Amino acid sequence: MASLRCLRELSRRATTVLSINQTRLISSVRRLELPGTSITHGIPSQNRSLTRDSPWYRSQGRHFSSKTKDTDESSEGEDDDDEDYEEVEREYSPAEKVEAAAEIGYKVMGPLKPSERLFKPYESVFAVVQIGSHQFKVSNGDSIFTEKLKFCDINDKLVLTKVLLLGSASQTIIGRPILPDATVHAVVEEHALDEKVLIFKKKRRKNYRRTTGHRQELTKLRITDIQGIEKPEPKIVHKPSKAADTEQPEAELVA
View 1 (spheres, helix red, strand yellow):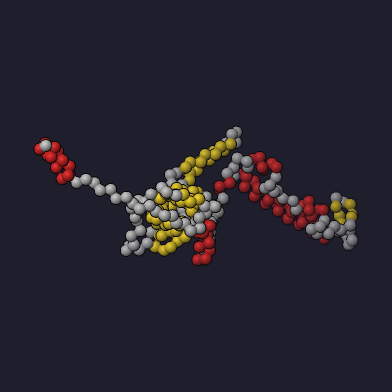
View 2: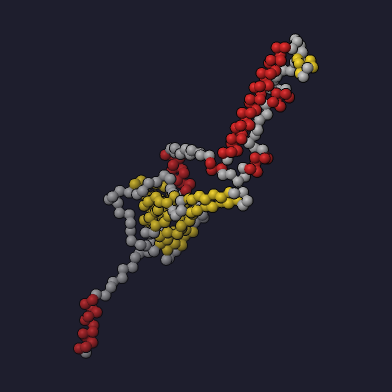
């Protein structure tokens, strides 16, 4: 890449030096020529106007282009990652943040307060939610990892609005494609990075090998509640006491 850039720079400078020398030679010849004629190789001829429309100016103004067939083959095995591009983060207004979050499938309700107790015991209800382009089957108390959600911080309360299905032991509700009255509540626990994935690229017979790594940014959510379906009442199972277990064998012995 560096050698190709040097050749291009040298060729550009050579063309500029040649054009300057030719213009100086023409100006010196004009001083010696008669009015109305010009001397070219010892033969008088009419003056040539050096304008951009003349073919002589076009021929002298040629330069080497980087997009030629010769350079395409040599630059086939070069990496385009040498140039650094500065990414500028876009600033969103509050209304744009709400719209972007709604397109992904969630809504930020604010930070979690220390006095709030959102975590409940397990309930036999499940839901299928869509966040971005991924779908998750969740129930109360589950934790899921999604692609990083931009507009939320740790300990923020979220409402997942794109609920596709609700189910319990007694009924199942299917959306077409979304259930408008169903919501799933969650809390942001952390922003983390996934395991590193290696990307290897190779072009045979071109001496081209590139190895890069990628770690996907993730957001961990904890499901706190599912609303929009009748929840069965929890069954209370009474365990027999130890005193009752000890009394029965004694009664049998007496009999």
